[in-house]
Image (cartoon, rainbow, N blue to C red; front, side, top):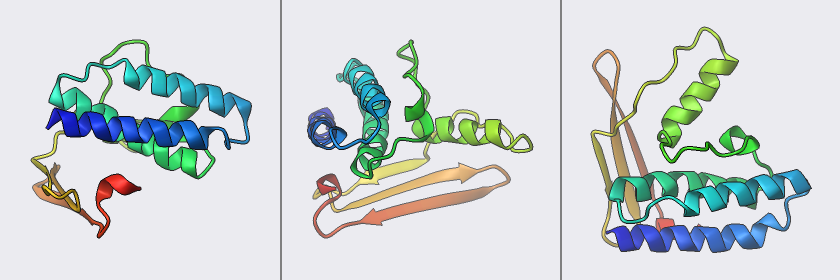
Length: 146
């Protein structure tokens, strides 16, 4: 399983390397490089860390392909290797910008599963107050292809 995550990471880095040259702002290109270097430096033998870095690299990949960095990638990556999950990081960024929103705590999915053929992904998370949030993505070409 970790091999699949490592392959996904390498493909994303290759895609980012190609598309980063089209970022219009030279500072964005430097920031992108810093983030890729940081994420590539994280351990790849731990499944949870591999999933964490893939969350960040796929989000960066989407932004680089659209030639605009925002969110966590407008700042340098954290110095420590203890990075919080992307959803928690984004929630806390929103809470800083909108004072009446509460800060996010650790977010752990109750269920997270990708189909063996890579064409479907399901994640279920608990919502405070007793609800659940379900997310499902399906692609005929496989989710690792974008």
